[in-house]
Structure formats: C-alpha cells, structure tokens
Length: 290
Image (cartoon, rainbow, N blue to C red; front, side, top):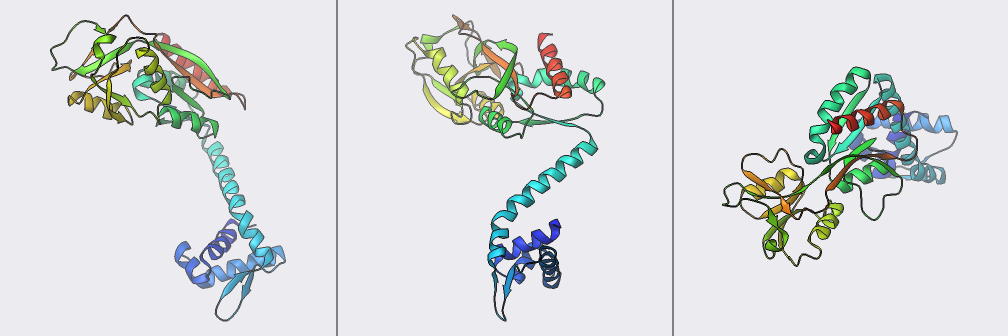
C-alpha cells in the first residue's frame, strides 16, 4: 500500500471529513479523494460511506483506521533505518556530561580513525531518560552510574570511580576536608529525585549513620542548573567528579571519604552488541584509563 494514500485515509478517519483532512495534510480535497479511491481500488473494498452531507467509515474502514496507524509508523521507522544504513551506521550515545564528558572526546577521536564511515550522535540526558531510552532502542550506549531497582537487560563495563566532593561557593571562607556530621541542617541542593533516582539512593547512603540531616532546598535537572545555584549561594551540593566546576565553586574532600561513585558504559543485553559499538566501548574504556 502507498504510504501517501494511507496517510490521507487516516487523516480523514481522524478528522471525520475530507475538508478537515485537507487542512491537516495541506493537500487539496480532490487530491485526498483521489488517493482514497486509489486505496479502495487496491484493496478491493469500500473504506468510506459517502453521502451528500457526511462521510463515515465502513467496517473495513474502521479496521484499517484502528490498525493502520501502527502499520504506517512501523513502515516509516523501517524506511528511516534503511536510509540510515545507506548513509552509514549510526551509534547513539546518551551520557551525563559531568561524568562522561572528559572521556567521550578522546574516545570518539580514536574511534573515528578506526571507523570513519560510522556516525555518532550524542544526547545529554538524565539517568532515568538514559536507561528507559536504552531499553526501548532510542540509544545504543549510555554512560552513567549503574544502580537502582531494575537493571535487567543492561550490561555494564566500569570506566572510573569518582570520589564525592562538597561543592560550595568559592567566596565562602572554608578550607580543608568536610566532616559529614557538620552538614546537619545545611541547605542542600540535589539532582531531581525522579530523574536521578540512583543519585538519590547514593546520597542517602552517604549520610546514613552520620547523624546529619541536611535540609533539601532545591532539586535540579542537570549539572548546569545545579552549578548555577551553588554559585549563587543557594546552598551546597554533594557531587562526584565535576572537573569542570569552574573558578566560582570550591570542591572540598569529605572525611572519612564515602564509597566512590562508579561510572560505567552500558548497553542492551539483547540483541548482541554490534562490532562498531564494541570497538567504541573499548575506546571509551581506554580513554577512562588514561
């Protein structure tokens, strides 16, 4: 079946009229009528019940309207995948810039020399977005912190272990390691607990048994907004890594140091990792070891 004919029919089914479908598809009413008649001729059935003042769906038309949208979406995805193959293999990587940014640049530079025909797309995403996107096939690789209630279907390779630091405004008169009990009652800035559930669980373990109960005064969707809030003096934050903290933020060690944060690269267990993806994983691991 012709995609154009199906799209026109689905537009009529959704809008309830050819004129409405015309406005939606930016095709003339006569063009839509011709396409639907061609579709009916191809299938050998009537899809529309036409009268002088209205249009309805026949039983066959109702079935096609119900299932046709799914078929068209699948066909369009397949078309795009075929075009991607023609353009060259595409690898999609989602990552947390604060954790993986320093690794990906050198890894991609080496990978491009080995596989110049493979294209790579990068996506800045939260932990939840990464894992959900990986499972549904939106990403091929993710670079983040493993953990959480459901890790099924994901394989991991460890890249680096990052120590926790207390981030505070550089203007504050503070130096030396931070004792966790001293953070009782302080204003704490954190990553959004819905988008970064693993961070929330790790943070809870850091404070467990210390007697410290900081006051959460802000939740943020990423490092850029969290850093801005710290720079503005809205509170302090506990972070891992962040070599890019900048001159306006002071990063202080914690005494005794909590367990470090494990940054890893992950991929779907099934289907098996492709050859180019496997090489890219090796390059990311190699960059992390330098």
